[in-house]
Image 1 (cartoon, rainbow, N blue to C red):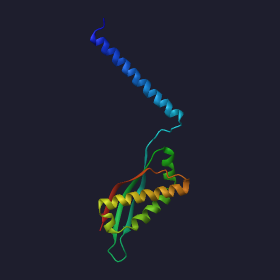
Image 2 (image 1 turned 90 degrees about the horizontal axis):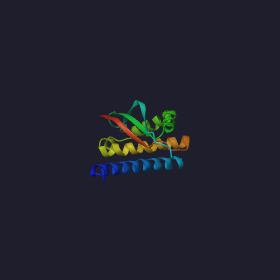
Image 3 (image 1 turned 135 degrees about the vertical axis):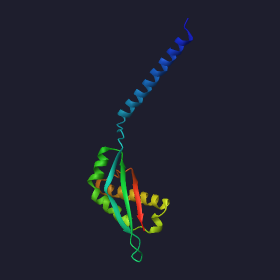
Image 4 (image 1 turned 30 degrees about the horizontal axis):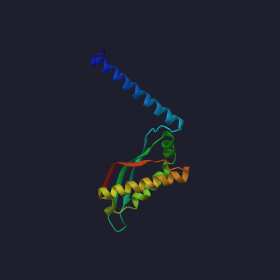
Length: 145
C-alpha cells in the first residue's frame, strides 16, 4: 500500500512530464509552420532631433527629442539603420510642421508619435517593400518656448 506522500510524488512527476511534453510539441509545431522567433531590437535614431516649430509670426520655438524604433528581427533593425537618412528627414519635417498647441499636451505628443511611426513605416515600405518598424518611442521630449 502506497503512502499519501508516494502518491503525491507520482502525480507530481506525471504532471511535470505532461507539461514538458506539451511544451515540446508546441515548439515542434512552431518550427514546422516556419515561424520565425521574435527578437525585439530597438534602434536609436541618433543624434537627437532638434527642430524649430510654430509659425513665422511667432517667437522661435524648439523641440528636442530622442527617438527609438522597435523592430521584431535583426534584419528589420538593419533595414531601419540602412535607411536612417530618409527616416530622419521625414521626422524633422514632421516636427517642424507642428503647432505649439498640438504638441504641448500628452494627447498631442501621442498623436505626433503615431504620425511619426506611420511616416517611418511609409519610408521603409517605399524603400524595401515592407513596413518593418513595429513601434516608435519618444525616449526624451523637450519643448523650448
